[in-house]
Length: 210
Image 1 (cartoon, rainbow, N blue to C red):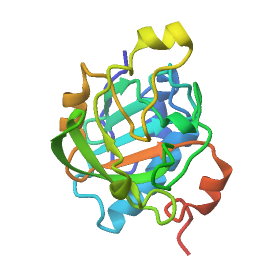
Image 2 (cartoon, rainbow, N blue to C red):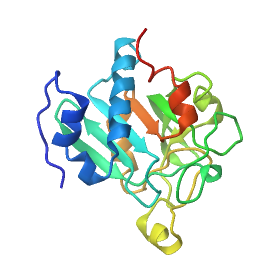
Image 3 (spheres, rainbow, N blue to C red):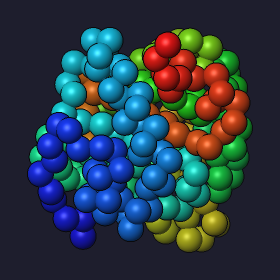
Image 4 (tube, rainbow, N blue to C red):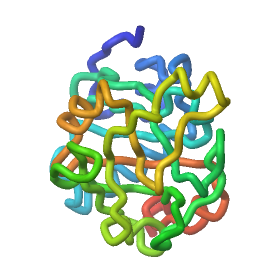
């Protein structure tokens, strides 16, 4: 059980990480610290409308791990920690190949701003706007959204060694998708992380200010 702690504005990413017990929960320190770096940059640029929530998907973990973390920075607690899919052409158990190209059926890394919700092919879904040119800025064109999928479940993961995969969307379990989407919709920050050298070298959001 993750222990709720009250965070102060001046607390460093390292202190937050330790206080929230995120290492025990499985989130890599690198994913969290880079998420916070980009989050602060997007907030300073006025791109985040709701700055109390950050969501992190850690693709350094296999799909059988609970690698989606939704964190309430204001209250100092983890709201959700659950499974999430990657694109079918990004890999099986591990997501290792990424693309911004339509019809690639791969996940796109980087920072997103959550949009509005709608009822679509997969039911209640959340639009995602990619903020990184050439990395994930075609998310809307590609129809990359957060939605529910019955193939995102522990039983399937244990049976075959990996959960089901999407066409590039971060799909979440059916039993929690409405609560997750309701918590992060309309202007929060979502970061999809991988220790992918190409992404880390090319992401302008992660580059230090000149």
